[in-house]
Image 1: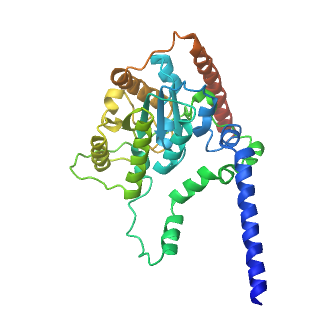
Image 2: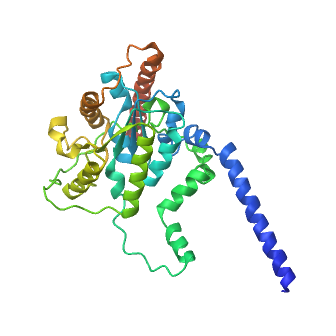
Image 3: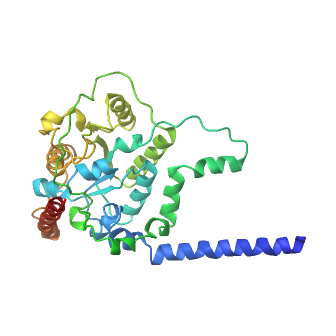
Length: 345
């Protein structure tokens, strides 16, 4: 191949790549948007993006974390007990960098007074092995590109990669309790009998957190404070993904930021949790009864420490009462669906 032909071929490849990139960007901001893809179809992100249904600047408390949080905190329960408007932004195996991008999104529409950060996401993967030596900038790029962080950046900038398969949700009729009336909570009423073993053995040791995750958490905290939000850290009750070494590390992180750390694994008796029957799986995610008890306990803490306005008597927030009614109806439908499925088995 002659030099001119090589140049022409290279130009064609670059032109194709440029057109493809522009097309993906256009589709990301028109068809496969976060609002359309994240809320109109059944997928892993319905809970995360359900805040699009909230009126602007109406959310007082924002919770952000992974599946432990969206299984363990019930915004409608908090409203009924304390008249506080809240939203949970969570997704399976959510990373701190994903959480940072979600925060940037929600701050465009909301001005929460308090942000509750669930720290289980710091330990969704183990501490990295020492990276391979980086001899060139290209080596550095590919080491970065192999991480979940790179994926989070791409998903944030090009939502087509997140919602490109949303058509499947039209075909798949399986119902999932991720409606806007749950305000980010995932409902599951049934329980699985769990063998409970001691998992919070007291120790002075700390389990280290990846440096990049600590940096991303720092980005989250700074972003919250730039928007005038108070913060506190928490950890939902979980038998399978928490221990005292992690508690110690999390406590040190909270102290660094001058914030509270509410580790609910230390207060299961005070909460009134029957740990044998409070989970929907083998001890990782709470069921509805367990989540309600956790929300009641957290509500007392939030009400005592942050003095958020009780809005139940404010007619501008009557839609929350309607949301509670609709959510209860959806809960009954979901229970019936699961009962029918079990009867067929």
